Length: 425
Image (cartoon, rainbow, N blue to C red; front, top):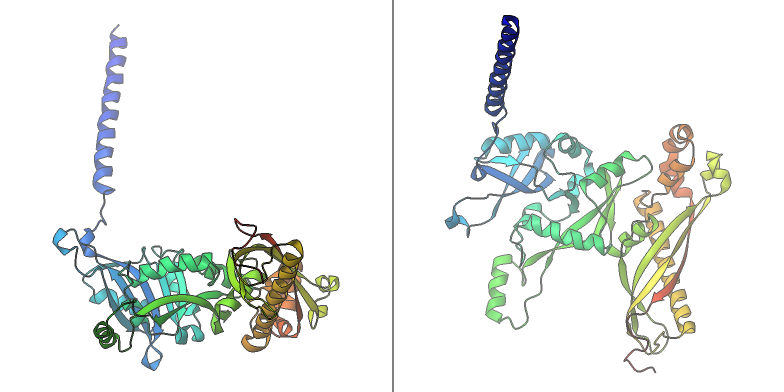
């Protein structure tokens, strides 16, 4: 009996020790794993926009637009963001110097837009990507754009519904990419494009344009605006077109129509609308939207086994898709089957001409395979053949290709009416 009582006492003692140890561990975890790196929100500067430019002497200048939140209600009406700059030997060096001058702890986890100046982009953007890719806070979903305007003026723009320029650029980029007037150019898209040997980056272009004075605005009011901006209207942001690259260096600009042509041939066209001018004496226009567009790149069969057959080869880009009629301002109503087929044929020829002009620009003006033909070749030939025989000379081979667009679209939707209210002439 005494042995049994002793064993029970030992068991109770071990249980008590286990409970005490568990409590001590919990207390230790609370004291050690607490929010040791927590900061008060008013001590943090949230970077919303980062601009990278070239300063005098080849040094790097960065522009930072930062939101400065406050927990004090009386400060809610103050300026919601401030913009500052810093120079250094590199992006990291300029950022380091900016941190040493800032009273706020600058946080890069909320960057909405990364802006490269044209001068910096033409010199190569790879030197700026390394530090951002290594930063655990940087958002890979941040937009990456290029501008030919001063970055400090871009960040100074205040839109009607958004007082912070970086947030405004973020909003209009969402709209521009949906309408395919600008490419989908997030940081992750840029990194992916640079890592694919046969691909070339395409980044959205952001510009400053003069906004038109509001209707009914008095001459005195116009004069005040002119005094503020040095022109008759205030500046506003426009996202339209793109910057074309060869590797990490910018080689030229593309307008919205050319940008849509590139996206079409690369199967990245989400939605694109344009106006088609009708022929004949009546003339007029038809507004259309493209839908379900797919492109296929066709090579000679011999090119898959013999890399030498690529030089001077004929490459056919077949584009097929549908057209939705959005508006008819023409005496030719395009409502019966024959007129719809004629309209589809004219639209196909117009798109073919646009693609042919873009192909000529890519081959002989930009000298860059922005169409993505090289990536298609890389996927079809063995990796050993691409690395040793095709890739080293692809830049020159691309210029010798005979690229032929072959477009065929058909009208699939005419809207909610079968007869236009415009009288047919």
